[in-house]
Image (cartoon, rainbow, N blue to C red; front, side, top):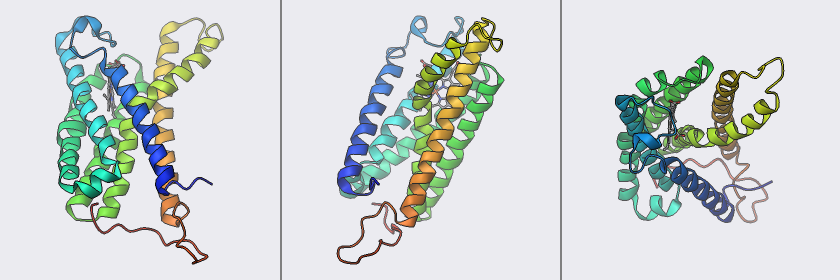
Length: 242
Ligand code: HEM
């Protein structure tokens, strides 16, 4: 089985993650930089307040996405620990926290139905909860806990991007059933189902994938065995922030 904690494998995963994240971010931001209400992908019906709340959410979300990605590169953590801390502060205080606050009205105004809205608020709560847990662990110098919580937290950040992929897959399934008894050609019902199923699947898949990864680390399954020991290494318990 793939050994995620081996440096070569981890480097490949990090490169793949970075390419996907930066490409998705570039695409998402393309409609909002520079801000122009006419280009908005969300139909805000000409409501400028709603548009600027949305742009604020996206701007802080973009800071979180980019800063969070940087934190996973081992070179930054090991060689530039001060930069790691400042990027971490940006992640929290110019990223997930302000973006989450803006999500309270932004999610309330979304028009994709109740199941989607429930998912949006569940995601926001998880974003803040795992972020606060990660921040508290770092401040208490519980660095192994901090690392685990931040991996969970970034999985929630990335769910906002991967939900677009799930949405594309759901669209294929839903539109294939457009004339079925379920939808009876009702486009609004189809769009609501695509948005909500994409969101929930993205969130669940990311959270499960992360828990599997963390459990494997704890059980030592992802750790290379010490040379000549003939046994697995004990779970790693980082005692330093880097
Ligand atoms: C993780 C928690 C997040 C939640 C719950 C969330 C939720 C939302 C909501 C409710 C909207 C408005 C949709 C509508 O009115 O129909 C939205 C739009 C948007 N969000 Fe987020 N978001 C999150 C994170 C992010 C992140 C990290 C980014 C990265 C930049 C981001 C980028 C966007 C973009 C670009 C839009 C505009 C829609 C589009 O052009 O596709 N969001 N988000």
